[in-house]
Amino acid sequence: MTTSQLTPGIAPGRLSPEQYCENFADVAPPLGAHEARVAADRCYFCHDAPCVTACPTSIDIPLFIRQIATGTPDAAAKTILSQNILGGMCARVCPTENLCEGSCVRETAEGKPVEIGLLQRFATDTLMEKGAHPFARAAETGKRVAVVGAGPAGLSAAHRLAMKGHSVTLYDARAKQGGLNEYGIASYKAPGRFAQAEVEWLMQIGGISVVQNWALGRAGDGALEDLLAEYDAVFLGMGLAGVNALRLPGEELATPATEFIAELRQSTDLATLPIGRKVVVIGGGMTAVDAAVQSKLLGAETSTIVYRRSQAEMPASAHEQEHAATSGVRIMTYAAPVAIHKVADGLEVEFARTEMTGAGLRKLDDTFRLKADQVFTAIGQALGPLPEGVTTAGGKIAVDGAGRTSVAKVWAGGDCAVGGDDLTVTAVAEGRDAAEDIHQYLMGA
Image (tube, rainbow, N blue to C red; front, side):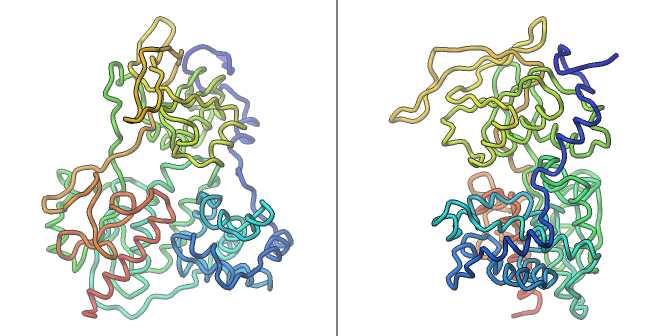
């Protein structure tokens, strides 16, 4: 039986093989060598470099761009990776329009910044394609560190600790390392198995062993006290394992957008993935955009994001919102879900219109319904169970300084810890800085 965008209900194979390939191709194709040199020549090499200040990992951006301009991209890659070991992925997924490129002097003067993200990708890809690893381990220290969570924070911490000569065991709840880089971003942002290739490249540092399918506190795995008894220090970088509930009638009829994206990311044949003819996504962040856009790219006839506040208040960046709109996604605002109803021909999501008042957001009596075959929720993620004694604040692990928790010998960073802004680049910075602090502690400095 053949299907199309107009096939009712939820169905796989709505598009041709050629359409799937086109839809999920690299959203930002890489620069060639000549293009990179031309792009690099636009940099003013500012001495006060506002782009560096705007970068959470403080990469020396003028230096690496000058290195590209002078024909030494491998040196540029080392400049990047010394600060951000996941510089390849960050070049693909960072909201550069809000960070380095948003602060570029060219952006202020001309409305067109230096293409820092693409230049960073050119440098790191050039080095990685050679299979080269620019760092070497220090002499063995005899110290052992457990890193829980193989996402950006955990990988960054593990690499820096291994480079310092410590022995690292990386524990992760999934079968593959990478965290959100592997399971949580839109496929078109990092196609071609890049997330795993970057992990494999990172592991070339040596000194890192991996324990898969292991979750902290899960029966049969291990507890924090077990790790503390075995290791000299522990870093927690497990991210946010839970998802926020809608807490409304019919919520069981919806699917967390994170589950949908993870399934899509692991698929080897996009034509086998079923997608609704009409898709509704509840939320307004990056995950909502990724779910809505990919639904459309899989062949949904309509894909609609519904957010309870104004479009300007959506957590997703303006760039991501524009990408959603150009991909055919409809964005509706000032509407909050009140129920999901099962009807004869699928689902209906009931929304109440909202308005901002002096006392905050208020639901109005005016309601409407949107027909849907699939409903995805993207209203934020939550911290999973934590060991006793680990203090939390605002729903995340409380930390002081470079990630020190309330428990001796335990550090934390990334999305699970207070202070981050749920970006890959921020998680990398926090993992790196915690590793430096752990190293100082282990060496008695």
